[in-house]
Length: 86
Image (cartoon, rainbow, N blue to C red; front, side):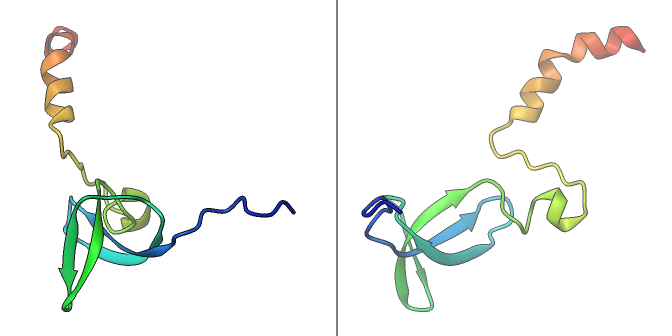
């Protein structure tokens, strides 16, 4: 096995699911500018759009997660196509 191929500098980082506000802490080397305080401790913050608490595969529910308005843009773009089929 080759030496020194793994990143150095692991630290505790908070990941926050923006669709349901779920936050979890794990080790990561990812750089970020944001921070969050959890139980009096400040952690670097990584914002994510979907996690195991909001993904339909893990929840068993078909929930539409739309954080950037992409679904609405799609529907307006193809609205005429769907109206012609009916």
